[in-house]
Image (tube, rainbow, N blue to C red; front, side):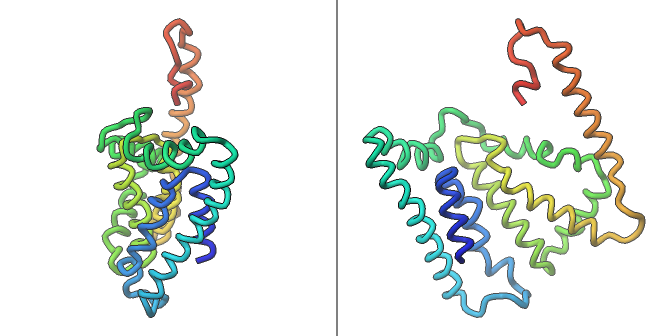
Length: 220
């Protein structure tokens, strides 16, 4: 719980309350992903009390900086750090407004280049199908799925908002491949896809006329 409190506090300092969308769902949904687990908590009352106390400790950690900073910075700065950069941006972001389906359309880019490896896709599907018997898989699904859905329904969207969920995909892929038997894993197709993409990024600036506006590589 000390580590959870530090994650909440440091996350609030770095990016505001968006950190809670990465952390809280897995903690709150623990009764589901820990079922049939030997390490399942014996008392859910104690578990949720730990969640609440760690959350409060993380908030106190950020307030220890925010209150003195707000007093020193004046009213405009105080409004910016307590409202403008937190709840207001999550509810109504004018700078990066995207439709609800935007992250779904971007999902292939998150899985690049592994999306081009049929063996991994097959193994990943098999692992997800057996999630009912695997605590770790259920945890990874909660970790990625809850943040993916939550950020999809927030008006302001940027690709890097879901970067903390990429380790969940990496762990799921690693687990899926270790469960397979047979020939060693040789990701030739993903490697080729990555080389082709790299070649395109190198070639695009060579054909770009600065008068045409920003290049694709600059936008990326």
